[in-house]
Length: 314
Image 1: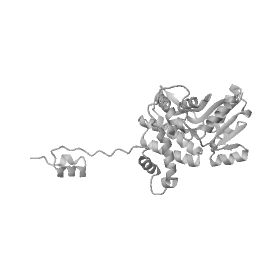
Image 2: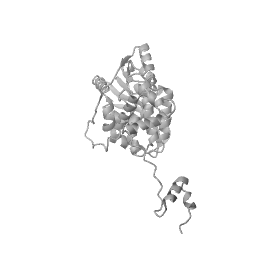
Image 3: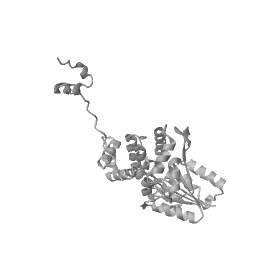
Image 4: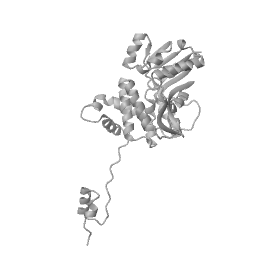
C-alpha cells in the first residue's frame, strides 16, 4: 500500500487553521481581543516570511496558555459549526485536485499537522482525506489542562509517519508528501516523492538541493459539505481571512515602523476596515440629579473620592 501525506496550513488551506477559527472562538467569549489581534499579526509575519522552530515553539506555548481551562466539547462544536463558512472559502483548489488524484491512484491520504486534532479531524473529513495525524492536548474531565500529549511537529511528524507505515504496511518509497515549511523537511525526507508547496525561502533552497518538486498553489475555492448539514450559526470567522489580507495590503513597514506597537496599529487598521468592532467607549460616571454642575465637574476631576468631600446642601 502507498500513501500521501499533506501538511495543512498554507498547503491544503491558505491560512493558519487555528487563526481561522479564532474569530468564532472570540465571539463565544473564550478569547480576548488582544490575543486575537496578536494572532493575526503573527499570521501576517508567517504569510510573508514562513515559520521557523522558534516561532512554532512560541505559538505552541501561547496556545497552551490560552486554552487551559477550555471545554473540549465546546471547541469541537464551534469548529464543526463554522467549517463551511470559515474553512470552505480558503481551501486550495490545487490541493483538492492533488488529494483526488492520489486517491484515484489507490493511495491512502492523510493530513499531518501541528494544529490541534479538534480542528484537523473535522477539517480532514470536510476535504475528504482518509485520516489525520495532529497535535493532541491533554484533557482531564473534558477540560484542557494546558499540557500536551503529542506535539505533531518536525521530527515527530516523520517518526509518526514511519511508525504508521510499519503498522499499516505503507511503502514510503512510493508515497508522497506535501508541505510549505522548512520545519517539515523530516516528513518530506521519509517519502519517495516530496513536493514543496508555496515553500518558504529555506524550504525552496532545500528543495533545489535535493531535487524535490516545487509548486505554487494559489486558487482557493468555496468547498461545501459532502452531506447535508444544518446551516452554520453565522459566518463570523470569515473576517480572519479579510483581516490578514487587509494587514498584508497595509504593508509590513507600517505595522513594524519604529515608535509604536505593531499589534495596536493592526487593531486600529482592523477596526477602520470593519473587521473588528470599535472598542466600547469608557462609561462616564453617573451623578445624582440634585448635584450642581460645579459639583459634577469637581467629581469628574478628582474621581470617586470627590463625592465624600462635597458639602451637604442646606
